[in-house]
Length: 602
Ligand code: FES
Ligand code: FES
Image 1 (cartoon, rainbow, N blue to C red):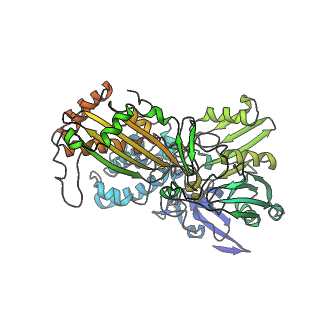
Image 2: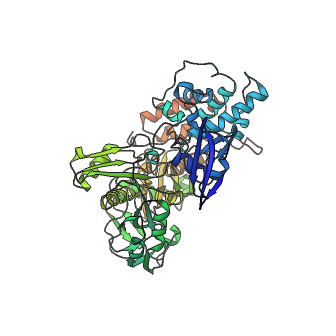
Image 3: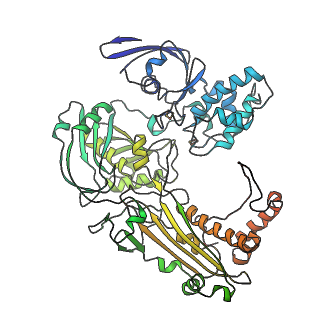
């Protein structure tokens, strides 16, 4: 390493090729590998040495490139995933393909580099033919996260490669058409796309949980050389920010450093307001109110339209609640009976809570926008709905549909949160328009955790009652969902359409000064079915009944009858121990539960 003015020069060898990087002293190994060597198979996800997506091999050791300085690569032998191209796959890559140890593929290069290091150590110590234990593989891979949850395939891939099952194997089948691109790091995600002369976009978010934006002065920021555009993106008609991180401005500049300088130079005058974060507190009559003004548009945490609702403080009651119940009076009577014993009723009643759960896709939300002319727009973004987004863009920007091109070749995890015309997409497009240049805006990890989306926090009061003949006499599901400033937690519908019998079901949204929740994998189904199915099990346990028989008695669904038949045919289920019979630190058991999504009416 040599110093030339304030920049450093680092000479290294990557994948057998000598390279020299000139970089800022604080640049990471990941920065130079991606930005200067153009080796985008090495991914940035957490940026903190936690997830392993950026794992490379330096002198035969796997290291996380995001937390080592670029200078640490000096005179080293560096291997990135691109070392092993499609025509000379490593046995570990073949095993990942064959065992489908991947889904979105964003974590895959990091996993594979780690697995190659483990494979080499294992083979040196044990030769060919011996498989590592699951514990040994888990320990070796413990620095890696796969948000898609492809662990079963990953573990089997590592085991089989270490055992030598893919040595000297040239022909093998694999299920994933795009697998080769993913295991060789050639799959291009939005974060990997580069345009010549592209500007960096950044969002400036509120540092306050609730405040009126009185004025914004961008004059000093605009005067900074390299700042190419600043736009107002505050989406609240009352000029109020309602959560920390609520986007106010978007800035385009010739580098990230300049964009950050510009953000620091913006002066915003806020008038602070009372705020509330806790949902129980927010539901109290004397709580700070998130929307004291008339609500015009509230973000939607679900995938369906927002039905009309009635507001009281922060609590919203969807009017559709009336349709959620069935023989409501009977259900309430059974649940609240003061003579349950005389009537021969048995009942369980519990409160189930689930925390908000962020989507945490390894590839952050982001966009690259390029106006090829005033009439023609090209957008790259990880999205679950390419054509829907293109249609939305066409209508939003009043462009002919054929003049809007949306690319989403690979998406590094979405889970429901990458759909629709999100703010970072329109901000990027608007910046590109005023700057007359392509703009790339990628959320950093903190923004991703704030703006990316999450499954709402829920609190579900669930009660179920049965008579002496074990007929269901009433079920009650009262669900409160905290979607931040959004609405539509929608837990109750799933209960309404599962099991026959009287039901009292109601949903309530409790708004808080938190970022809006987004749809997440079977939105609201998991909290609903967890409460429902745990309650049925608890009742069966209390009555010393078989949980399948009790469900059969209550269920009028042919589809689920077939499921119950199957459950009873499973030997592990038939031979299960009594509840509580497993002891020790690690306990095991077997259970089953039902769940629906879009087939709720079966
Ligand atoms: Fe480097 Fe997560 S460990 S990006
Ligand atoms: Fe592992 Fe998607 S395949 S994060």
